[in-house]
Image (cartoon, rainbow, N blue to C red; front, side, top):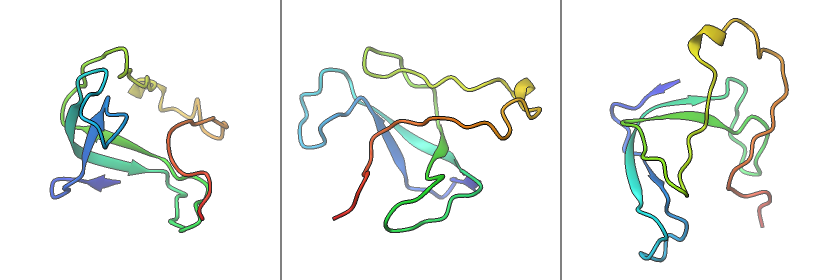
Length: 98
């Protein structure tokens, strides 16, 4: 877990083409407060397993046709209900390197 009080990371939601300014929705920009990496994550240039993180933003995003929340279980579910279970994650990123 990284506390990001000194981080200079930011998150842009609703921005699909970084080379254009005419997005179909309003772009939302947030500061990163905290990054929680998967405990088994190790950086490898060619990619690898467990390369995901939960990022806490400085405020709640506005929901739109292009920005939707990811629902996580409430803290009361942190009792091993999901421990050891497989999950499927989807997102944008590289699936191979050239």
